[in-house]
Image (cartoon, rainbow, N blue to C red; front, side, top):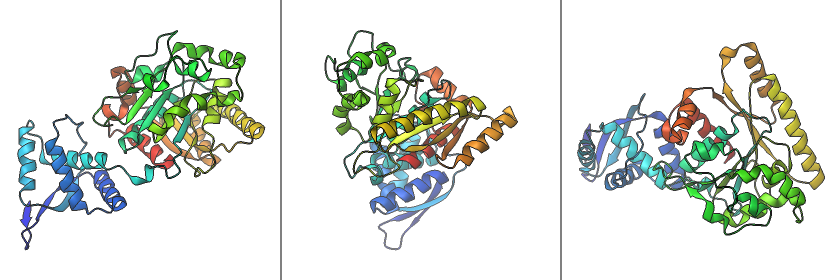
Length: 383
């Protein structure tokens, strides 16, 4: 519905938007000091001018939304929707708002100190979903406007495979060689950009290489000072190009893990709660045992080197209450820890497995499923 204003310079438009998108629009406009009506108008103009195929926005459960637009702009949006295979007008408006949000990232993500955010997704226990959490959080940060580097630090290369990125061939330049001072070129030349309109070239991957299986041994024999800083020395030249770096760690308690923990320490001048450890766990007893071993390693490194290492939080992953009292009681015990806090409980749902099969990012495959929503919640709490 369109109602002309008495002044004639604007028309009141009544349509619908999903509540989450309306809230994101309200918050972002307030952060940037922009009127919501101007943001919507700019988004419509940008969306109509773009020829890119954008991911559909889940508009289920949309409720009434009204704003004021320049005369004729709503009719122009409707015409464009018709031209684009009869797209519903609500979908066109939602995509327009999403276009504006993507083009106008939140200022809260820009590092005032110039220190890149470093999220280390870590647990020496395999099968807890480190790769899914690392990838999901990185996607959520990139979706929200941050320039993100996702480092596949696990020589098994599951993260690279899941995102459709080719692993680096053995014997070629790699992160491992740069960590050991044997790099053959510039590490930035190995970085791959994820070509998805949702992330607008803000999500990047440093692929895995099978030579990572030898990393602990190579670090042990390498002639270098402060071997725990090997990962930091390798990645430091890339830091100026990114707002956040997310490390997908291997299931190990060796030197490679020490280097990742060291990289995630809080640096001088860095705010609390920004860089540190994100620990995926399962709601089962063996996961609690593995967590205790990891905590011992972190505390030993903290004490030995006088580091400030933060636990950003736990992610209870692959949760299914139908597994009975073991699952439900374990979840309760994780929550009762208090510190570190539980950032999110991610269900064992089909969308992540579908995304892996399709070799595409979860937030592109199923942007508004429960798992994607959980990844965004984690990202909000640690950025």
